[in-house]
Length: 367
Image (cartoon, rainbow, N blue to C red; front, side, top):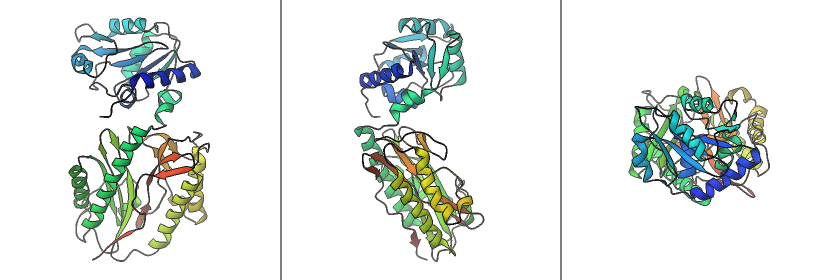
């Protein structure tokens, strides 16, 4: 797992808290906590919170996790045991960081509801919001170390995709092709995270559940894959066909490629996320396939495979240098095939840098 500069990140977080007039940020075990302190304790039903006030921070820590967690951080622990519950320890933790009377609280939107209610019950009358203006805003802009991990993972995914291309044979099942992909991720020390293989009509379902359908001559195959190594993910979608492409495949692939290029051109610092979505959607709609583009243009990626910013038709997020997100328009023709082309990009001062080096051309598997 990548080491983080916790003091630097706490300082940046407190800057955002001041801007947003927030008196307390509460994070549960998960990716937000991971981003701030470089680890998170085992996530179970026992309340565990990282509590960050304007000047001090502390953990509400189950005693069961304290010893192992102490190896990861020197932040003060307020521990509690199963036999007496978390209420007194939570009160002590809030007092220690000067947040016993906090009136503006940011809650980790991914934490368990019972953790959130425990905290809110201890702070009656406090206004609460989620992390979009604090931790979430900071996480959207990746630093050089995060970029390096994402770039490394993109290379592994490129090679896993090439392994998929080399493995395609008529008569093999979607699951057999997925197995070759998973084996490649594992061979490079990455954990396979997902493997969508949608052949023929199955490709018209954007999140098809890879199954027992056999690959046949004339199939177009959507291959959307990702793995994880060193705490960060990958995500890429490319297309393959078995032998002769189906009718109109080339025309529709070209339309989707033009939509990718339009989104790449639109993605600049200062642009609203919805303008990037609109750029891709306009190309597909103008070609007469608007009803067949059934999902957003992209999602952010960092510690989580899906995280802000989301590139949707309604997102007013202002894109900034250092943000990482997917561009993945698609056209899905029911009963025939789907085509999706996906790049992960990091936004630079002059536009997006694509993390993959694999061309978006369709791979034609010979019979």
